[in-house]
Length: 208
Image (cartoon, rainbow, N blue to C red; front, side):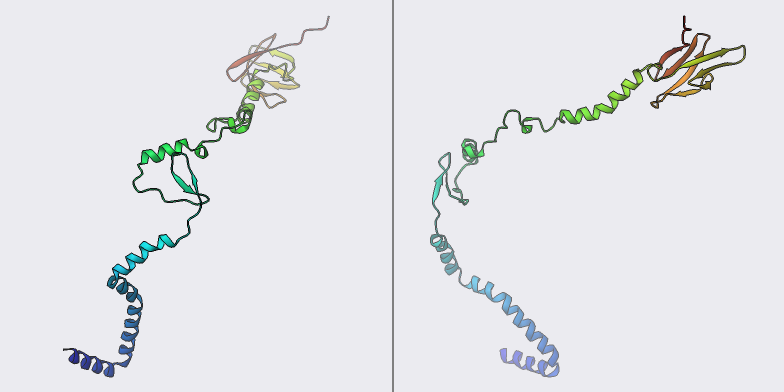
């Protein structure tokens, strides 16, 4: 049977030399990759003995005791016993002083809660809002608005504020950018409104 296969292979090689060369290269590559695996399969006892003897040859570093009775080599991680229960390992970690969290010093920035924004940042965020509320609380007199005169007629009402003429419903802008709305014009003065609040701006009293 083997002679017939060899004769057939020779005929194929003679008929197609390129094909035979490609098959030969593929066979060599397969032998290169499969030879180590076949060697391991054929000699399992020898590999097991060599792997079992390998740890004995490795140098053993000086061991340092760890809390809980577990020995760990100095400067390296040692394999833990296979029969060690996870509760014992957790208890040993809890007792190890090197595994305890470092407490921050008094007065240091690390003592603050990381989930709470610093006071400085809160002040910066609230700063513009506080300034805006302070601007809203200022009266027209404090913002430099001066009412010069008012004209109250049967069909028309006007007021002169800082040299400009305004009528009911007109917007009046102060020097700091604060905007009022002229709601009423009366003989004694005008009524201004801003952000739902009303302010009275009266005519200046005549000098005695």
